[in-house]
Length: 460
Ligand code: NAD
Ligand code: UDX
Image (tube, rainbow, N blue to C red; front, side, top):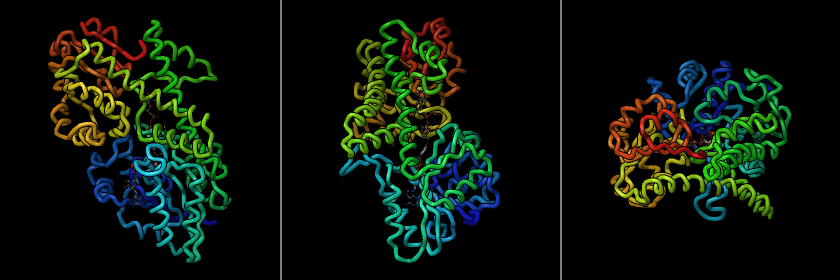
C-alpha cells in the first residue's frame, strides 16, 4: 500500500483536535483535515486568536500555529473530506446510553454508525477507516458490515487505534506516548498507519494486535487506571478512622516497583469523560456474555467512586454542625482535573449537587471553566430547577471574591495556582471558624493550621 497522503478525521473534539494537530505537525507532507458538524467548534479551531481554541491544553496553541494552514485544516465539509482522504479517523463521542437497552451502561454508538453510513454513502475510492473513538469490543464488525454493504465496489480496511492521551497533558502524551496501539486484519493497512506514527514514535513502542484485542485493551487500560484510584480512595476512608495518612501509604506501597507510584493519589473521586463511561461499558459487555462475577468486580470501582464523592460532601455538612443551609461554601475548581477546561463527570458537580440539596450557597471559581458551563452541568442533572441552580450558585472570575466572607472552602480541582494564594488574607476575610475541605490534598496543612484554619483533607 502507498504512503498515506490525505487524512481526514471526523470529530474535532478533545481527542480529534489535539491528535490530528500532532499528526499534522509531525507529518508535514500529509494533508490532515479535521471535520465536525459543530460549526462553532470548527470556527474556534480556525480562530486567529489561539487563546480561543475550543479546547484548553498546555502547548496545543503552538502545535496548531505550526501546522494550521500548512497541512492541517479544520472544516465542516464532511463529505468532501471523506471523498478526498486515503485514511479516515473516526473520533466522535461515544457517551453512555441515556435511553433504551443498556441505558446508563452501554456505549451509545449512534454517532459512530452515522459516520460509517456517511463514509459508505460518499466514498468512491478505497479507504482505511480507523477507529479512534473508544468502542466496545467487536464494534469493528458492525462498522465493516455497514461499509461493505454499499455495493459500490469500494474496499474498506478497518483498523482500531485507541487513544491513550490524558487531558491536561494531551500534547506531551501525544509527543511522547508510552505506546501506540494498532489493531487490524490487513497487514498493508496496518503498515500505512504505522508509517504515520513512525514519523516521531520509535517503532518498538508501536504495538500491533488483532482488532478485538486492540478494542478491548483500551477499555481495560482505563479500567485498571480507575481501579487504582478507587483502591487508594477506599484506603483513604480507612486512614481517616485509624490515624494512618493515605499519602504515606501511597508512598510506601508505590515504591514497590511491582505496584508503581502512579495513580495512587487519593482524591474526592475520579471524573472525566472516560473512566466511568468505559468501565460501565466493560461491565455491560461482561454482563451481556453472562459473566456476572467479572461485571460485579469492575462495577465496584464505580460504586466506590460514587461513595467517595458523597462521603466528601457529607463530611463538609457534618463538620459544619450538620447544617449548611444558607452558608457560603467557596469551591476552588470545577474541572475534573487541573490544566483542562473539561468538566465532564467532574466530582465537583456531584459534591455541589449534594450540598445544594441542603440549601448551601456555593460560590465557584475555576481558572478555565465558564459560568455557563457550571450552570449547564448542574441543569443537566435535573435535580432542581435552573432558577434554583442560579439562586444557590454563583460563579466568579476572581478567587478572592469567592473566598471573601465564606464559611468554608472546598478544593475540588488540583490547580497549582490555589497553592499560591495569600492564605493569610483569605483567613482574614472568612467567617470563623474558617473551614477548609481539601478534596485534592493540595494545600499545606501546617501553614493553614498556623493561620487558624480548621483544615480537613481526604485520607488524614
Ligand atoms: P468530544 O465530544 O470532545 O468530540 C466529539 C466530536 O465529534 C464533537 O465535536 C461532535 O460534534 C463530533 N461529531 C459527532 N458525530 C459526528 C458526525 N457524525 N459528523 C461529524 N462530527 C461529529 O469527544 P472526545 O472527548 O474527543 O472523545 C472522542 C472519543 O475518544 C470518545 O470515544 C472517547 O471515549 C475517546 N477518548 C477520549 C479521551 C479524552 O480524554 N477525552 C481520551 C481517549 C479516548
Ligand atoms: C484517562 C486516561 O488516563 C487516559 O489514558 C485515557 O486516554 C482517557 O482517560 P483523563 O480522564 O483525561 O485520562 O485523566 P486522568 O489523568 O486519567 O484522570 C482521571 C481522573 O482521575 C481525574 O479526575 C483525576 O483527578 C483522577 N485521579 C487520577 C485521581 O484522583 N488520582 C490519581 O492518582 C490519578
